[in-house]
Image (tube, rainbow, N blue to C red; front, side):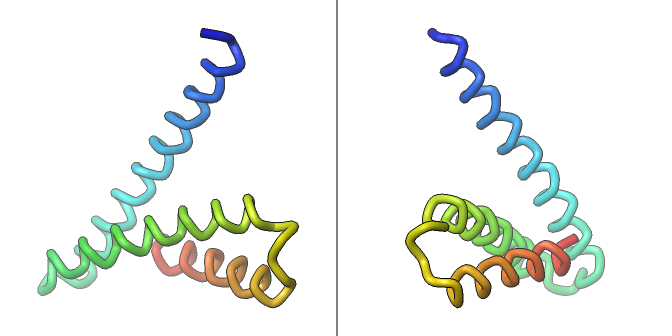
Length: 86
């Protein structure tokens, strides 16, 4: 396995680990605030975190192809979602 491929896997693992830890603390925090609805909050938090990752990835991959309105909306959405789930 080449060094570049190994680095790519290391980068993927690290990014997923950081995202997973952040999602865990975000979801646990939300369940402590809204303790009466534990499973709905866990589901909502997991879907929001997944949506944030997919949207950020979409913005990165399609930056040159999408118009400015879509870029603006997605960037603001990811930033607001990051603030809400922090």
